[in-house]
Image (tube, rainbow over all chains, first blue to last red):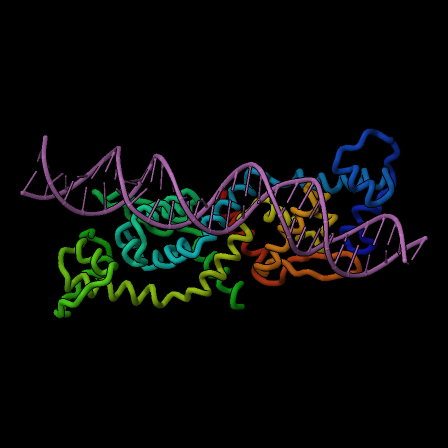
Length: 146
Length: 146
DNA sequence: GAGTCATATCAAATCATTTCGATATATAAG
DNA sequence: CTTATATATCGAAATGATTTGATATGACTC
């Protein structure tokens, strides 16, 4: 374990607990790192407090949003949809991609909540969801060339 | 091809070109959809103008950023790093994950420009990159529960 | 209802990612 | 110079994603 670092110091700096109970794998590792069972136990407690404060489901949902945006073709579709509502045959033609592939990627964007679908006769018209989608694309652009 | 839609109408509504040249696959499809070679050619031209205006490399770079954020473990690491700079052994302990896995995920975050690494003796300390990272996480949160 | 068109779903092949133990590198301490 | 620690990299297995033709569904047309 490193000697410096704000959180690191806070994590390992406590020395109250005394009881030498059986340690779980996480604490075992910390104990080995610090060479001190008591400190390790408290450090692990602090770390566990953080990891438990994480909403596992929300994290997975956010990851799904990012995964939907992690494909160049899907990103291009999102950019194209800023022009307005388009149906599958227009999108597949714009990018010269097979129909099944285009439909599949649109379903991924839809499942992630990035686009909305509207049935109109035999056409399925897709549009950007209202909300943060465009802001996200802009931020990513800033991230890359900024 | 659908009869309605702002861009759709614009795409198919032009009727100047006359020459019946050999059509590429993309135009062939549009021609079949519209039933008109001339209209199809102009529509395809408009679509091609858009697809050519797309910066392929920038799109790939943006996709890489999103892909780096598309894993729950990596997202959790980013959240943890808001607490401050941490080394690999602290992160692997916090989440009770193998060292090789933790190191691997950090390298992905680094390659995407989301975190910065600083060598300090035998430790590698990681911190969030300055810039839009935190904003991106916040937006994703809004996206999910908003 | 037969035919056509737009879209979705399926299935198999290909390709990429994740995981984790094992090994390699590199820094520090003795 | 040996040992221990922190991290990176390798390699192989498992898992997941993408691609594409083929098929299925569902709506409009005659």
